[in-house]
Image 1 (cartoon, rainbow, N blue to C red):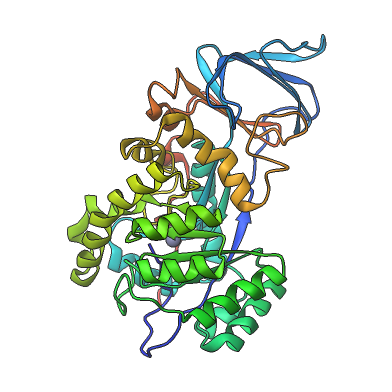
Image 2 (tube, rainbow, N blue to C red):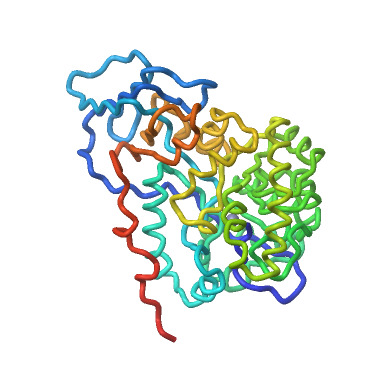
Length: 417
Ligand SMILES: [Zn+2]
């Protein structure tokens, strides 16, 4: 769902908040550099089509140094036998809003957002990041947070008209540190001033967006619900379509042919529909329309073999519930093993960091989670992660930090004015 930063009163092309890949910060509770061996009843390596029995992963420092069923265990290693669990690469989420929280009373939250400055927002994001990490998501991509790049550009409305302005805006964001470019090329659900499926870029503007971003070696993620906008974005060569609710089979076929990723964000619709009455009436209608269309679109995408990367729109729903996306994808026809690949190696590929994360392989970063039982028999095991290692540091081995122990955003005192 598009998180519109403000209500626009003129009819124009809406550009592009910068977005960043966050490797969620780890808090260490283990000694550095001791060799640690993780053992489990089974293992998902991030890429195979089935689980591997008797999984063993050997970790030294922040790296995996060996992995498999029958690997030599160094004599000085600390062995952690996790028992009847499945080891997996740390989960990844290609679509989050790590500084935002639009759960609870929507209107109240939007008003509060306007009163929150960048320092307060940063503090509020800490428990969101912690909840995300404890849920097993060791890498997330932030696709739009207020203040996420340059305050100057956000202050200038985040809007660009015409190909040249779009090139300028892309250059500006990259200069200020963005490492992926996000554009809203169709209307959104959580925005008041547009229809959900209308195109907001012309083909010439889309081409400029992609050309300039790729020239600067940055990927392009487009927020897009409508079919026409998606087709034009795909033709222009974007890297991913976020949401994609109304995409028709012909558009999905084009997407498959060009190898472009779908990031479906099923959780967002699911959450909004579960409390639909609490949103303004104009948004309710848009959410209903997008929700009704997206299930069929997703089923078609799975059947046709479109590349799918897990992304949730966390921030629209509570941070830390990201793993519920796995069961939603399986419920709409995806094989459990493919859902697991979608939330690990596919995300790593989409984000351009597959050389470092996304699989359990020698030399990869030691981002490792464990979940009870066999997730290919019960995909909701992904929602009960019991062990999290990030960069070789054990974040959790057992129950998560109770929510009451985390700083809630209501605890951050905002200025009274
Ligand atoms: Zn979003």
